[in-house]
Length: 345
Ligand code: A3P
Image (tube, rainbow, N blue to C red):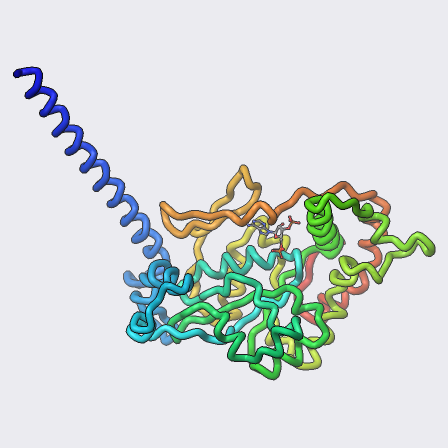
């Protein structure tokens, strides 16, 4: 009898203990999400007086919760109406450059409560078939957002595709354009590495980078090779400048975004006229990945996918030197046009 009572007592204690641990875990998660709001919410005036550009607290609270659901297509018409949610055309586009760090830039900007990202690359302006579907098709591809938020999309192919500047101009001649660049030779090798990985996945063989980047007949840099052409930033930018003034572009240093992301993001916030909300709290270095990752709150962090940050193959130093010499005059021109100088060799 006594033994039975003791067993019952143990069982009760176990249930009570489980409940206590469960509640504790729930509280930690809640505090985590509040913690996430803390550095972003200017409720205690830490970020200066409330201005016109201030984001309502309600919007901050909904950003990670409801909007996430809505974006997944779970919103009912009633919810959308109640929360005044809309699908807005982008006010800013990351137009390139491929392998410059476009995904990292988009994900990091999305930490800002006033920014909503289009998760997928839409390829509306560079793909004739998509473009023929019209601007409403494009708008419907955008995530739900509050009217005061800005939507950003990224499709790196825009930067190098001839028809794109005119098409974007026709949609919105005052749109803000973000270009993230890296040292051109490193970018070209990164571009090659991505293609090489694709070939290897299909069990195909591929040329060495040296063979593609250098014309075997002339021993000069092969300007027909796409990875080389994409890195001649000034040539592409000049096409864009026929439609947009330079003030509408912001150049992001992709090499610095890797090693020191916050100052680069702060420059973008300024360019987009957003109040500074992304803080060091939102970014932490992950030694295993070798990159900065994103922190939304104490519970929710994320690093970029493994396809970002590949190991590059070794490239013959004479080829690297030749390429760097080739890009040099184009880089000088790029610095001159953009007013942003890099320490590229
Ligand atoms: P590598 O794979 O050559 O290292 P994109 O998104 O335009 O394709 O650019 C990919 C590049 O983003 C990667 O090139 C990587 O170096 C860079 N990158 C910048 N910040 C990163 C981050 N926090 N995590 C992973 N990759 C990052």
